[in-house]
Image: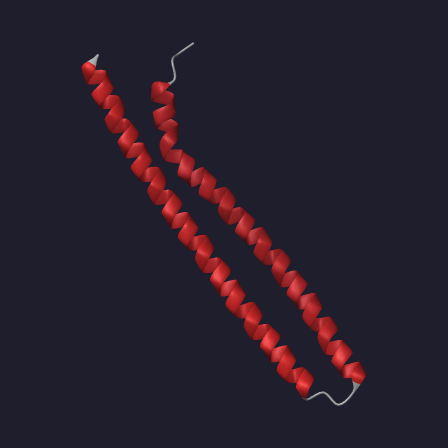
Length: 109
């Protein structure tokens, strides 16, 4: 009995360590993506603002704004999809080390 308990503790510790490692790695990847997107979004907005300062006609200003909004929306949707996939992968990778632990601790039917 004691030997089984010690084995269970070792399996539990190994699974938890691997799960936390996957969690840390996944969260770091998500944070990097968000930071990169934020930087690019800010740069794009600044570029359009600078272009608007040099516009001579209201029609050109409206066209610039329309293009910026379209591109910003498409970029946001693409980034949101990518971040959603990263979160999905994070959950899968975090749970993967725990699958063996759950299988070993669940009584057979």
